[in-house]
Image (cartoon, rainbow, N blue to C red; front, side, top):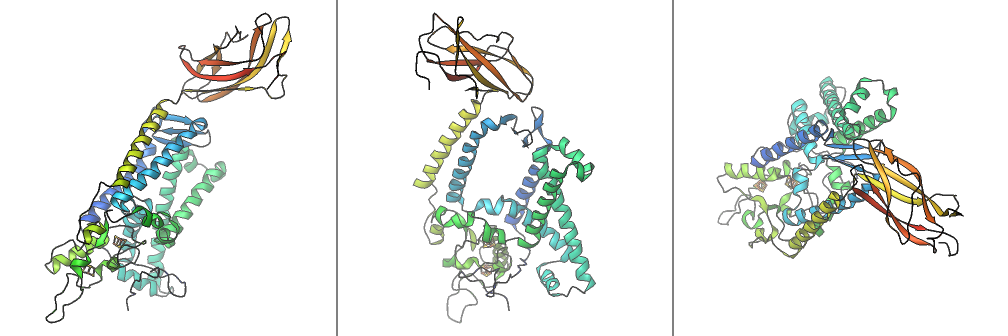
Length: 464
Ligand code: SF4
Ligand code: SF4
């Protein structure tokens, strides 16, 4: 007898704690077609990004080895990692806003777990092992049957190849395609780190898509658990219209019947094994399979489609969906503010970095007949893709200062960093005690890139 899902327990876990393997039935329809098109566009986008060059680098290249991150033509160093704050908070607010408006649309349409599982690996399942009934039969077939060995073995092999390919594309984001080529063609011992990373990624992907599957959504992913906090009665979700569907089943003579014929087709196609007719559940990944499945049944029994559809809980209860409400407006405003601040911050990222510190272990100052001097340590970073010559000058100081030996400038290779000593000298007749000063780093064109503050220490005044 078919298992009857319950809101009180996870469908994929039996009473004794063992795993109940799901074999969702295939479904056709407008939503599945649309989702498949989006999924393949996303997969193509993921595979294409390392091939697309902007400003001489892949569109997304997380060059961990050299601690540089190339994103859509911009190059960020470790010193610019603070920009990640905007990326992470922006992502958080986007998730809040989108979920409040459209429920778990991310899960159903764009999450890599759903995209790869539903639109790649399940296609392989169907191709090699047949439909859901054939797959369930194969599960029950003993391993000594050569047909099971052949089909399961063939499927495992194809899974391994696909996981291996996805792992290589993933690796290309960290080493770039030119960097990946010698790793693929060379011996693993020549690139042990990359080889281990690739094998580990392949293994994790294989484990996830072969065995773990919907458990990732049900047990591990925190997003589903946030659903109850993020979704309200006006969020548009995949829902069952109980007002129209109940009482379900064949009508008793003389009694009115709802539109649900209790065929359980919506349960058979559900990749997480739930019954949408029991209401909104944490396990629902909003994949729309039950919408298409029920529409197909409704068409067959000549009733209007949409018994299961995108609708808010308010709408399903006979009311109206209110998209503009305090929380969605607030999320929108916060998103807008965040986007403006992030854009201004990203545009303010300089092509050079400059840090001024005291030289560790050196004397705080030197005093002689020429005057009083302090030695600082300047760390200069050239973030551009070509060599650059920088100069240091006094931007602000209460007394006249000189920077001996700075006439020639400081040559820094592309994407490199140098540390140089900087002597700051005050003539004896100008020295009145310690003071604050600011040094400017200018590039070849004379444009001031960064200004740094320092404190000058000398005799006759308390040092700090
Ligand atoms: S597919 Fe539609 S008609 Fe069939 S059980 Fe589900 S809701 Fe009822
Ligand atoms: S209930 Fe429907 S939308 Fe939700 S996961 Fe199951 S099939 Fe997908």
